[in-house]
Image 1 (cartoon, helix red, strand yellow):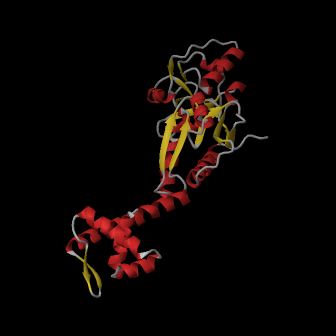
Image 2 (tube, rainbow, N blue to C red; image 1 turned 90 degrees about the vertical axis):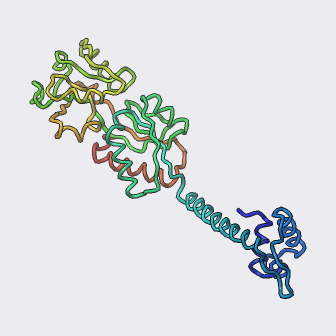
Image 3 (cartoon, rainbow, N blue to C red; image 1 turned 120 degrees about the vertical axis):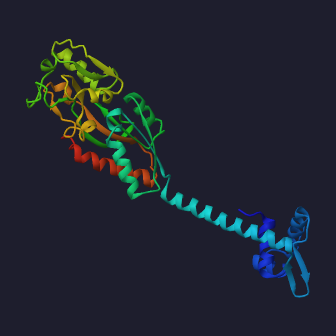
Amino acid sequence: MLSLSLKYFLDVAQHGSIASAAQASHVAASAISRQIAKLEDAVGAPLFERQARGMVLSHAGQQLAAYANLAALEAERVIAAIRERQQQGDVTITLASTEGFAHRFLPACMADFRRRHPEARFHLKVQHPDEVNRLALEGLVHLALRYTTAQDERLKTEFLGRAPVCAMMCRHHPLAGRRSVAMRDLARWPLSVSDPGTTARQLFDAACANAGLHIEPAYVANQSAVFLPMLPGSDIVLLSGYLAVMDLLEGAGLTLLPITNPEMRQRSMQVVTLQGRTLPPLAREFVEFVCERLSQVARLPPA
C-alpha cells in the first residue's frame, strides 16, 4: 500500500492542483499541502513547479511519479491475489497417511487433482497409524488416510471401505494357483511383514495366535514396500493390501490372494477429518476427490 504522502502526491499530479486534489479526495487542502511539503523535504528536491494554471511535475517529481505508479499497480495486484486466495481458501492441502496409501494411490490423486486445479499445492506426511491419528486430532492436517480396525469419534469419517490383508507373491509361486490361502499355508514360506504398530502386523499376530501358530517373519520393515523388488522369481510372500500394489500385479508378474483367516479381513481403509472443522474449499474438494477414487477400489462395508 502507498503511504499517505505518496497517495496525495499522485492525486495532485493527476488533478493539477492541490485544491482539485483536495476536492476529489474530500480532505482539506492544507492536509495535502503539508504531506507534499513533507515529501519534498524527504526527497530533498521540489516535486512540482508552481505555475499560474496549477502545478506541474518537476524532473524529480516525474521520477517519483513513475515509481509511485508502479508501486500502486503492484499493490493492486497483490491485493487482488489475496482476495482471490481468500475466496478459494488455502491452496496448500496438508494430509497425513500411512505407508499403504503413499506409494502409488496418493501421488496419483495429487497429480490428477492438480490438472484440475494448478494452484493446488500439497504437503504429505507419511507416518505410522498412531502418528497419523495424532496429526488429524490436533488439526495439523486437513485430512488423514489410514488403515484401522476401529473408528475414533473425535474424527469425522469421510470414507470407510474394506481393506483386507492379502498374500502377495510371484505368479510362479507354488501357492499362486490357489483361490485363497490360510495362515497355515503361509507358515512354511518366508514372509515379509510390516513392523509392530501397523494394523497389518496386529492382524497377522492375532491370526497366528488364534490359529495356534508361531510364524517368525523372514523380513520385517517399517515400510513393507521395500521388499517388493524381492518377490519376482522368489518364494517370498508379502502381506499387503490391494490398494498399495494394485498397479503392480500385472506388469511385475505378481499375484494377490485373499487370506481366509477372519482376522485378516477386519481392517478398513478410512479417510478422516477433524470433527467440527470447516475445511478450505480446495481442501474439501480434494477430500471428495480422494473418497471418490477410493470408492472405485472398495465398496463401503454393510451397516
